[in-house]
Amino acid sequence: MTTCVFIQIRCRPGTTYKVADEIALREIHSELYSTSGDFDLMMKVYIPEGQDVGKYINEQLLDIDGIERSLTTMTFKVF
Image (cartoon, rainbow, N blue to C red; front, side, top):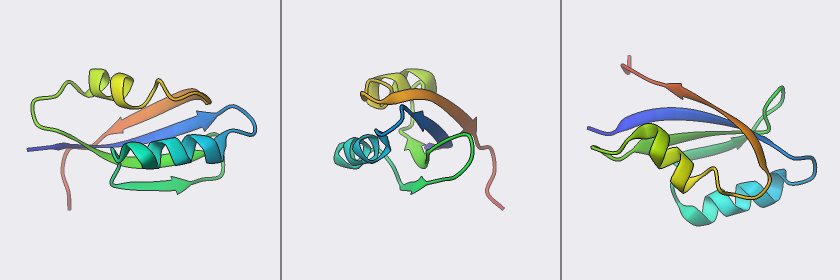
């Protein structure tokens, strides 16, 4: 079973569209939104079965230039 996580991303000023384009090219997300508030982007990701969530996010996402900070929310059950 895959693990669904939501990741909020804060980008350096002026880099949000570049970051979003790079995420889209990597095809690691289910959904990707621009948002208002403390974070600039929010994405829904299904972590492959057997993968360590933190390691997967670090290796697949957080090396993108322009990402300043992220906040990951784990999910447990769909209603």
